[in-house]
Image (cartoon, rainbow, N blue to C red; front, top):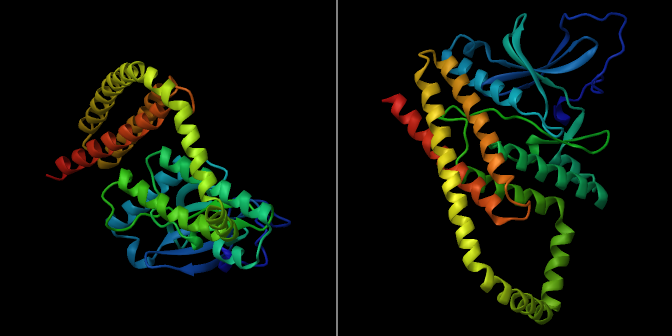
Length: 322
């Protein structure tokens, strides 16, 4: 999926005299600690094949890690995330995750080509939009870096890859701290993409500090009177919002707890809990839709929902371990 995977067939589509569902042209691209990365052709199209190492294929823990990675990948549907298609057996490789094959290069390699400013803006915007999407689903990438961000050779589009979980992960759900830390890493990547803009901004701040301060003071003064009059109404609206949010959270957590108690099978239980969490996103989004896009309460609802649900899920998992 990265530049190191390049091959004569790296366009993603292969011209052939046959068209069938048998795998052919299996090529080892990369060896990792827990898995082997192959490319292969089926239906005249190249795919990425992610297999466990032979010594790990019979171990339950590694198979569970593979299944969790597949569940995350298949649940994500975004133009800038490499698509996960299936988890299926491949002759000689065991159970494998089948993913989209990307003809591209890593963000680090792409930046070395000194891309145009318009291309940098496109890549930065797509990267931010992709992270907003996964964070809205209470997930983080967990290994966000230049080598896990591909830029396609055709169109300069971002493709985020490698959502694998580490061996020490207790939950697929991200905490508020996880999201904050990942946003900090994202800012560093955006600085790599926008080095000149960052320098220009610093120059402007040094040249025009007084003008900037006066503008801020004028804006603050113009809004002070209106803010003072609206304060009481805002407090009442916030109280109403919190009451609605707490009621929705109680219903949501009760549904998750019921799903966890209805099955003794770990896989069925995980699936049922995952479905209830997805329904919770609908409840949360319904509450957020009560306020305009620029309303601060939308962010409050999102942050409180994320924190409370993460705390509840971690507490639920600890109780199950006992």
